[in-house]
Each structure stands twice: as structure tokens, then as C-alpha cells.
Length: 299
Image 1 (cartoon, rainbow, N blue to C red):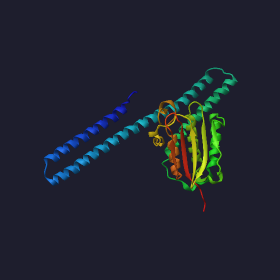
Image 2 (tube, rainbow, N blue to C red):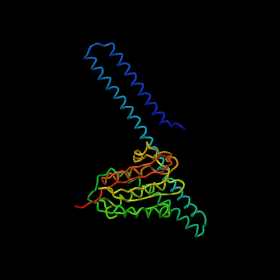
Image 3 (cartoon, rainbow, N blue to C red):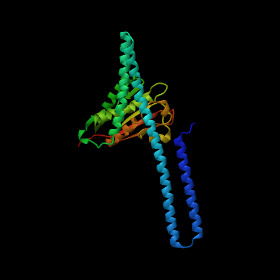
Image 4 (cartoon, rainbow, N blue to C red):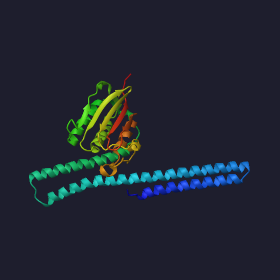
């Protein structure tokens, strides 16, 4: 496996920090053995402890900054690819239409492809803008009661159409208590969150799409569970996949994306006083994303 320059930098700072801690401890022990005055001894111990803590914190900071920069670079590369690919495709078809005669069937086919590339381009731009808006304050005044089970049904139907899936590939489990799945929130934001999870499940499916979506009640909360049989998630990355720009496992190189989808989902759920979690048995074992929202129970 190739070792990147940032991986080498991380290893360097870890080794350097460990060596500095070892030297500080060695000097401290030597100084203690040869110094018999109590007051300087206490002062020295405190100072050395502060030095060690400072070195540890500095090393942690450097490692986190390097990882953050690496994720930022991956995001820039991914967004550049997601923007450049449809633009290049649209330009190629426009040049073809301009430079040569084509049949009506070919022209319609070119228009269809360019329209699809335009949708892909707009989806990438909307996702980046949506991620930038997550830091804005809540606008609870714009919220209204809505049935999340009905919204999930709409998103499932739209997903089937968008990805050309049959009902067996994207299965929706009917909710036994659909009347109790009412939440208070912004319909458009929750629609985007559900769509992101469904699109991720399709995108990360291997060997055929097989997705299960269901809404159910659990005490004072409504749960949305979307599971797939895709590439899965390594156990140590189950919480990190919701970070900005983060992409888990082998998907960094095999699946296209910006690393913002699940970050937007988590920000939206947090804004609606809910949470989101992921479960997976490991790579190649599929995954399940669970969205939890408080039920709307008017007094």
C-alpha cells in the first residue's frame, strides 16, 4: 500500500512527540534523584508535567490538522471531478451539435444526456450550498407538523423513478401506526435528509440494489431505518462517516461523491432535535442508517 506524504507527516509527529515525552521523563527522573530540596522538587515536577501535557496536546493538534487538510483536499478533488465531468460532457455534445448534422433521434438523445448532466451538476452545487447553510441558526417558526412516514413514501417513490429501480430493489415496509409518525419540522430539509440517505444506499450498493426503508414509532420518537446490502462500513468508522468531507473505507476511490451527504443529514437531524446513527457488520456486509426524531404530540 502506498504511503502518502501526509501519512509520513503523521508518523513523524507521533514519533517526535513520543521521543520528547521520553526525554522529558528521563530528565525528570534524573533531576529527582539528584535534588533533595522539596520546594524546587515540587516546582520541577509541575513544570515537567506541563511540558509533557503541552507536547501531547501539540502532537494531537498537528495530527488532527493534517487529517483535516487531507479530507479537505479529497473534498476539493471530488467536487472538481463532480463539476468537471458533466461540464465536459455537455460541452462535447454541444460541439457535436454545432459541427455536424445529426438525426432527430440523435439530437433528442443528446438533449436527454445533457439534461441528465445538468441535473448532476445542480445536485453537486446544491449539496455544497446546503452544507454551508448548516451553521445557520434554527428557524423553528417556519416548522409545521408533518407525517414523516408519508414523506418517506414520497422519497422512496422518487428514488425508484430517479434510479430506475423496481419495487423489489427498493422495498418500503408499511408503518403499522402511520398516524403516530408526525414530527415538527421543515419538510424540505427533512426531504433532503431522507433523499441523501436513500441515494447513498443506492450508490454504495454492490451486486444489485436491495434496500429496505421503514418508519416506526419508539416511545416518544419516530425512527426511520434505511438498510442496504452494499459495501458496508468498517466498525471504527461508524461515527466518523457523519463528519464533513469524510468518506469511509474503500469508497474514497471506488464511489463518486463529495463526502457531504451524511454530514448534511446529521446537521439536519440535530437541528430538528433528533439524531442519526449507523450500524454495519463491516466491509461488504451492508449498512443501516437510523434517523430518530421526536414525535409531535400536541397538548
